[in-house]
Length: 260
Image (spheres, rainbow, N blue to C red):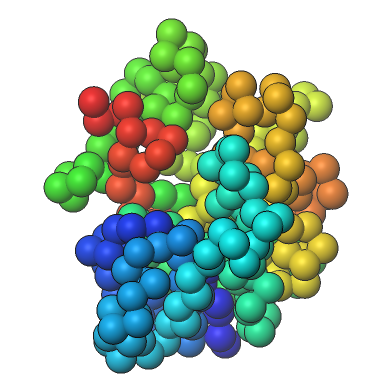
């Protein structure tokens, strides 16, 4: 089985190489990678790009220059990332599409475990894993008592308690047990992009949303949260491996304050 992994990148070549190596090291499946540069300086350099192509022959590198993409959102980062992810998905020719940010990494059996799960569950369209939180140095990051992704600092403790009640956070654990389900009519859309494996036809039907309301922007709704909400609204069946096969390094754009 072959899986396409879509990776947006901006200007972090050392971190990107770690992500590329983790995709190249996948076991049990053939992984091809589409790296989509967001007006990326090092992907715009032909010598550097050719060097990467030689070192990582499983990857295709595409640099998006704003002048060539007038419809790409400019004023809200998740919308811009959604556009880049959708572009990468459009280049996929495989039955399944996965996602990996340039600053994170997969365990060697991440993709095979999710492919096996979907192959065994024909009615499901999406599979996802859990993630293990790490510091920049690679030590476990335990978010005891606070939700590091909540945009309002004074509400992070309450958010943590609520998510702990749902089993997403476990005190003392660096593993985030993300979930996507409806609870009492409310959407729990807590699956990170890096954990997802989606059937390609599902992504074609339900792309990452690129338009966000004022309220979504105030709440700092990310593109993965918006996608999960759309999947739930469409009644898409989802299965979870219940295994932490993503190494998620803290300090990305939405959680930089967690390490402050």
